[in-house]
Length: 100
Length: 233
Image (cartoon, rainbow over all chains, first blue to last red; front, side):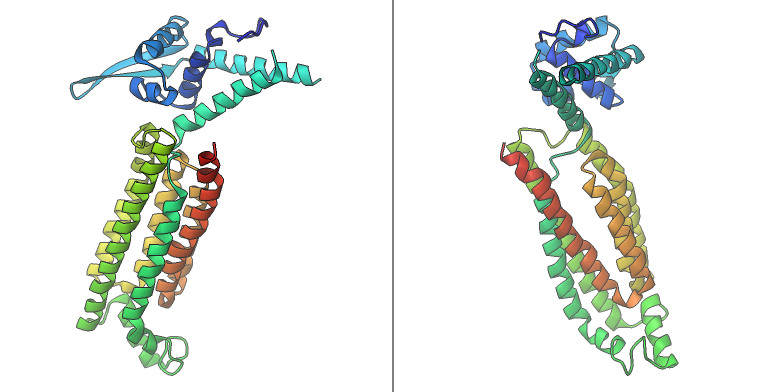
């Protein structure tokens, strides 16, 4: 993305990261495999974007076991939800500006 | 930065939110098929019940115009105080028809839904479809047991309303995980079930309308709204 406005969140510059955040805002939590399938991305790609969001403390990780298989779920943090909303507002403002 | 890019971005967010929370592979066509099976089933059931309807809907002996003695006889048939082998035999035939309609509908539903999911390269068994089934299962199983108990006690007259009401409740409960139309279908079924309860002699008619006509109606709406639009892409 080539938006140069300060309100835009750097963490959401990447389309996949923005999509991950959209899923986590709309759902209580989501597991790794479902996310991978929904976004149609590779393991490594998804993992690196999740890491980045985790580093920003926008999402939290819940590790558990389903029987013997590890099950990793992700959840949006309050900080992440606030950042996502701000990003959406910025998008909205940009549209308004260009129309006005 | 172009307008179009931002709008793209927003529509991609909206799309992904919807896909992640809703079971959208549910096929509208399967609703239409279920409706057709139900109508055929109701037709067969009507044939089985014909001798019975000839008594109850005859102006001379019938429920509405009948003398009080006939009236109580017929009420007995419906609410279980009379025990005749004839009625039991009919009930078993009706149960068989109902089970066949149910199996065909569920089978077609699963098949068409899997096909739709494949076409849109989505998985059928995901977080939202699991949630959809989980939510709907409780009212559905409760209703199923309730109806079996009605059968055991021979309360035949309130089986059709019970089917409609519990099915409607299951749809409304599960609808939060799929298209909003499913909720309206559920509410219509509940309303129809209550109406059917008011007119116990017309149970089959209400049943045919609820499971036949409404399924075809909503199935068609959903087909044109979601299935076709998506396959055109």
